[in-house]
Image (cartoon, rainbow, N blue to C red):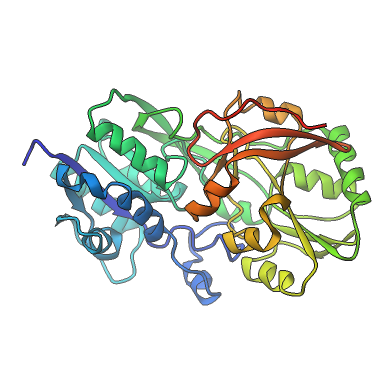
Length: 385
């Protein structure tokens, strides 16, 4: 049995519940999110990873946390599973994550694959030895830690490299978490909690998120002037979270939300901090819709990090050509040539959005910049006008 790769599996089934309901996280608000109609996303994210490894399952000895924390999904997909650990109740808690992570590490796993957000990474950091190799499948609302693959399929690619004997460098990566109470009040306060050992493959593992608000007032004023000229009563604008869109609304004299999704029509802010359901209801009222998203500094995600309200159905209703990225040239430079990253939760949509995307970088100034679902090299960015 030892010649097989020992894969540990742990899912935080509550991770990401606060995304589409605009709750900015899941800590302490899971029940509220479920009441508002949120659906668990972590199991589906892990399903994408494991389905991409079905052809290699005979090479795996899979040890999983019990029930909804891993074993149920793995068995459903046809993996032979050894359950490790116990749950304290039917409603999983952070203590269950820590106990099961410790039990899996003690049982012996070559890599612990876990799904969640920054809070889950923090629980893992509290529970496993320093030399335990781990990799996260991103399923939370906010992910500042560098222990996660860029998306579920990328996690599968890293595992495939390990299973097929490719050389993969190991590194210590930061575990960061955010104060969710402050986050819901529009303040970003992150703290370094520790490090975890991860397999490093530059195309597939994300960078640490850069914090802080970019101060490029004149450029954002120019973009705001363009956006004002584009306003009419037939077109709605969905503005994702981030300092760029917040600064644009501020320049227009509108009080937007730094960390929420705002909706603009005919120069007026018609919805602040919108949920996914509210966006969908607005789209069903008709008219053309455009979506302005910004790249998370350092990581480059334009979908799937902090803007889960802009769900796949919201994107499709607007139309792929109406998904625009707002980024100043200095913001683009922080990516150091890496493409924008797509992790909408819908692989087909991510594939469809892959390629050169329009970037609004100034007054009536557009650039083309590559976007990718896997983080690999794409065509060289160029001016579009």
